[in-house]
Length: 99
Image: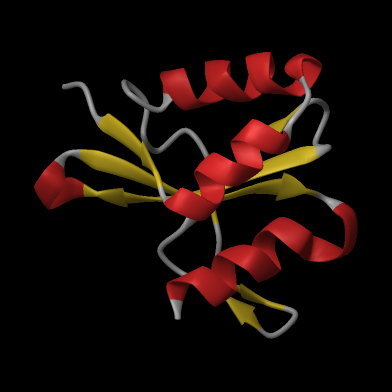
């Protein structure tokens, strides 16, 4: 079964801000989510950030994170955040966007 990968508006902006050397590997990971939506590691509650039900994928030797959820009833992967590792930026952004 093939899943539709949907980036929310904020995630689209984050993707566009990446340089080309970052966009290509991020796009490859997003493409793989179409057929392997549970490829990422499940997230939970850590450092006061509760992202239970969401997953993370690492890109470029863990420099960039893709935070997403799987919406089974719509056969969709919804990408919430694409961001850097520093100071949990991608996780904090994802948390804000889920509220």
